[in-house]
Length: 160
Image (cartoon, rainbow, N blue to C red; front, side, top):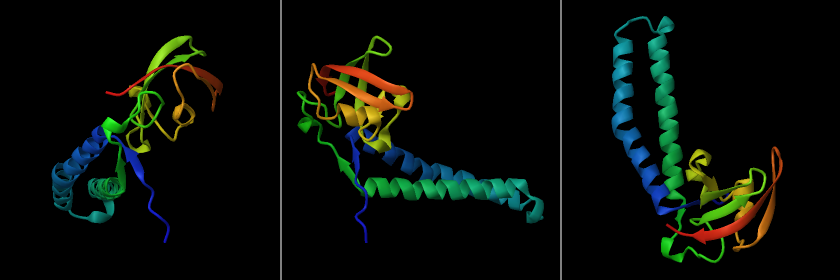
């Protein structure tokens, strides 16, 4: 049997997943059960779109619960006190100069399970995140991205 994938996460990421899991198990399951009960009251299930929709939502929710439980079971939590400040690692907040846009940007390097590019939280497995790992202040990296090649200079490394 293959080894289960370890999900590298920060403590904050684990808390978010635990909160989502709790919400799905308590609130969302009850909502869906109510929707199914109401839809069953409409009678004939063969043409009952409300019932079909509720059952699909139930399947999606149960799948997400299984996914979250698996991620939490296989989580490898980064000890924040062990996050280095001299090299980029998971849990680091990296200030970089983006040469393409000629701007300074701060990225949080997080595990893939908690990546949120719109909030500048990039995965250690993404092209940019992977290229920045292990780099020091002053180093320049070129990253192959779908739009071509981006060039970044590491300006600073810190932790929360």
